[in-house]
Image 1 (spheres, rainbow, N blue to C red):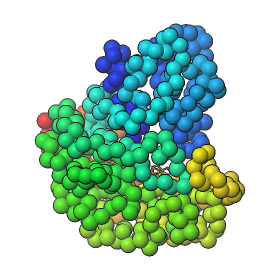
Image 2: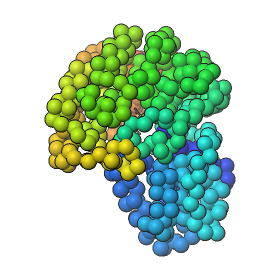
Image 3: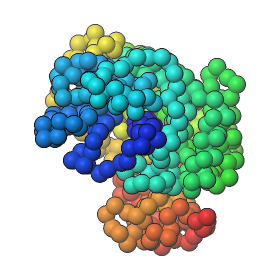
Length: 433
Ligand code: SAM
Ligand code: SF4
């Protein structure tokens, strides 16, 4: 989501005549897009803001903007802590960033107004973030903003507002533009993407075929699905539409009903497990990933054991594990953050290690099998290799050069690690257009 918002700002700035440069040293304007989900993320941003002070001391004309969730959350508090920041730009204002930069030339600007407006679509590539300029092979498309859920620990709804879905026609036009620019794989994004179009007329299951038929698009994914919103129609769309990939990110957060209830999640352990069965029956080749929070207030050893047993039972393909981080203003912040730091840490380490082993075993079961890979770019570690993903979102590194980028290739899996597969030289199925 943040990559998408950064692309929106980059596009707005480019339209206003700015160019992207590689470092703060060369820049006239530095914009930091930020995340508030966990305390640690915020501390890192404050570290970067601190480091920019020196650059600003040397070049007082430099304009520094803090944008997104931290800006929305702290407002003028950012400037109270770091007076060298010129712009504080909230989550609904990123589409107006160029205007704020101009105003900042006259004096500091804090704009965290919430108009409920949808920001413009990105006009700069969101594709392959971090892989340089130009559209890549894969791209994110934000199809909704905000969240109507009220998970007790989560700050997102208060910073990003209620759910708003973009009209299906607008999404399709953006996908058509991306396809013409060479994008082959689209990931439709929303905090709670499975509730897209709740007010109608087009739900996610209806949007998927509209995007899948866009010429040039070979694969479609969607992120993130709140378990209670995943229904039969969506599963039928994954199973029935060739381009829709067999991958679903299905955050469970905890394995005990007591914790799920305290977290304000709208499903029980059994309902989640039944949903996993239903997904695997409907889409046998599916990969399922998850998010888990350990150390939520009141989490006992027995609660944690239930999370461990759920992870063991489901055997997720991958998992993102977090330590609970208290966020002021959330319902959970009224509860005592009573799981000692050392206990949180040891639960986290145990869970990460367990998931690492499960991911390794699942990946190892693919050794010797053929998988379809969409080649995204050169491997970061070895210039004689390229990397891409399988339909079920596993990273694969294989021998090859730049001419393979954008191709769909059939690859035999030679080796497997917990996070990556190594492939043998590939047979190309689709040539770069
Ligand atoms: N909307 C998605 C959902 O509910 O499935 C998740 C969005 S959230 C930005 C990404 C993940 O961050 C969550 O799934 C949760 O595991 C984690 N998270 C959110 N708030 C947290 C907190 N206060 N402490 C630790 N982890 C948190
Ligand atoms: Fe946060 Fe829950 Fe909404 Fe996800 S579903 S963004 S965790 S409130």
